[in-house]
Length: 235
Ligand code: UDP
Image 1 (cartoon, rainbow, N blue to C red):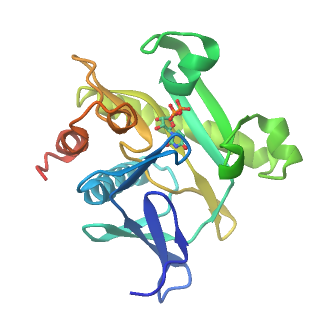
Image 2 (image 1 turned 90 degrees about the horizontal axis):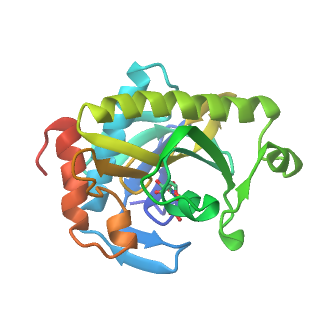
């Protein structure tokens, strides 16, 4: 196989014969705490490829422009080539993780309304929290794009939360990345238990990467359970 154009913590990106498309390969590698904790989660790449494809297809049907083209193999999907904005968009429904720490709320406390946050994608700085003014000063996106990021974040939150409730999964929070393709803003990256917090609605059991971050065990089983609830597929 050709050399990867880019290798991230959980995925590799390859060029294809089509200059408008990339191939994304999902790895089993897992990192947390800005790369301080490293490990592997067996089969994660296969599960996240399937789970992301499922969410992207759902969002396409709901009218959310995104980079997904099609699944190519167990660990690979074809996507539209994007120039990724250096901003992570996090949407939250329930206090957890860094928000719980920042505002001093206990994990699990419901927010009266969703919160949208922006983080500057910069490993050396540890991805700091920023607002629209920082984005403007750093030239990360136009004002119009910043508004679109917030609007799409809230719209995607409402689509995913409603769907997941029907599967007895609470969408606590999640991270999105966007990019530009032929001048158009598209949702990119992945939507998976690596990038979302999913809690079982009834038991509160964590079905996401917090099982790895916090050494809770049964990480692979949790990712498998997410896929099973979404598609019925037993993997
Ligand atoms: N998240 C992510 N990548 C990051 C940071 C956060 O996918 O680099 C996701 C994380 O899985 C969670 C949400 O964004 O679903 C909010 O994460 P938080 O800010 O609470 O950070 P963490 O607890 O991961 O430090």
